Image 1 (cartoon, rainbow, N blue to C red):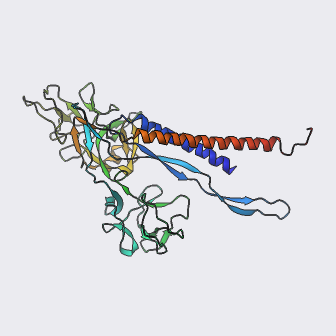
Image 2: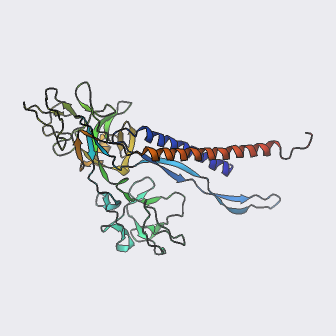
Image 3: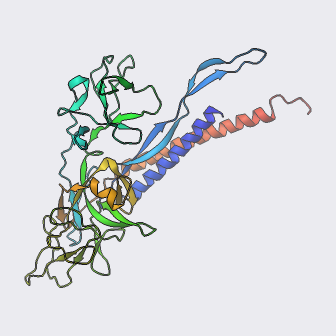
Amino acid sequence: MIPGLTTASAGMDVNERLEQLLSNNLANQATPGFKESLGELIEEPVQDMERISYGSGASGTYIGQMGTGVDFQEGVPVFSEGAVQTTGRALDLAIIDSLPTGPMAYVQGPNGALPASGQVTVGANGRLSDNGQPLAVYDANAQLAAGLYAIRNPKYQGKELVGADGSPDYDANGNPSYVIANAQGQVVYTPGTLTTDPYSIRVGTTDNMGYHSFLPVNYTDANGTKGIAVTRDGALQLDANNNLVDAAGHTVMPLAANGQPIVGGRIEVNPAYTGTQLFGANGQALYDANGQPSYRVYGANNQIVQGGHLGLVNADVTQISPLGKGELMVGGSYTSASVLPLLQTGTGRLEAGALEQSNVDPTSTMTQMLTAVNAYQANQRVVQTMDSLLNTAVNDIGKVNGV
């Protein structure tokens, strides 16, 4: 393996995938409620380099290390809110979150991780804490690591406890601001000692953390498997049976009177309704002068559900990934049994006759695309140069004149 060639090839792959992600962002700049994604990269393992010596009893000489580049890990959605635009269309709904802007962290709660203010301090036993609760520690599979804590590193001489993305700060001597320890205070991992961190904490902002509000939908995959997805796209439509559906054609899932999603339920707009608006301030049905409701809610067995209504659910955006057509998967699954425990009562509000625009900045996205193209071309030139050098080494070096 030739490290320089490998690194350049990896760079081409990273920039190609980054270009695809940015192209998708740009293509959805006019999609209501669309959330742009940022490319997250991960460093490839560092390789030791050795000068080879020949002859009897000869041994190699260690000459240092060389990085092998980076790899594209995933696209991470950014949940900053887009501008709300009034449309006047009766089926349009804008979702407006109630989250305050600013820092956020995840702490250890009695039943799992909970979002907190993001004001990280040093608590009891040196544990990094927020509002008196120790920060939650996650393993490499993004699962809570029970019995582990992030504690302030006694060797650290800096001032900041954590970086903006939750990674440790480092002092002039390379000491990380925190280490991972067990309940007895014994250090089990020091950040920076491995290429890929086996443990992490989550510190960021409400743009990439916290419980945001969504419309739940009855999702059906290509194989006919049914489940639950969520969406921020409030440009709703009606199917042939007057049921509310999202951009993918899936029925919007109503909520029961207690705010819980009615799996398999549907919201049918009343054709006899003569009013101009369909939804109240909280998504509830409206009534015309003749007492006709704007819509009715039906359960999975087609029975009318009293108290059923259109409404929002909350989902932790750190557990969300795109499914396509404005729909999102919660917790890496769309099966009802897996998704329902991850949903909470919605805290956002609905604004009828309006739409939340995408949060894509086309100018910034185009600039990033040009940067990715330039980086791709630079790595391509490296590959071409290395190919030319290898061709010379194979075909010309050591050739006897006249042969």
